[in-house]
Length: 92
Image (cartoon, rainbow, N blue to C red):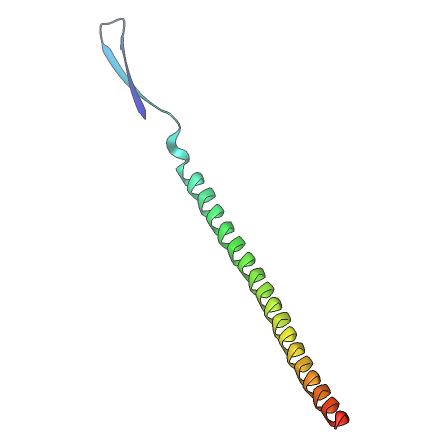
C-alpha cells in the first residue's frame, strides 16, 4: 500500500512550491519471497524422491525374503514327500 504526501511551502516573495512524497510499506521484497518458496518446493521434491527410493529398496528386500521363504517351504515339502516314500518302502 502506498501513501502520497503533498507539502506546499510559500517563499518570502509569495511563490508557492509543491513537493510530493510517496511512502510505501516495504512491499518490494517479493523477489526474495518467491526465491524462498521455490527453494522450499525444490527441497520437498528432493525429500520425496529420496524417501520413495528408500521405500522401493525396502519393498525389494521384503519381496526377496518372501520368495526365499516360499522356496524353503517348497524344499520342505519335497523332503517330507521323500521321507514319506522312504517310510512306505521300509514298511513293506
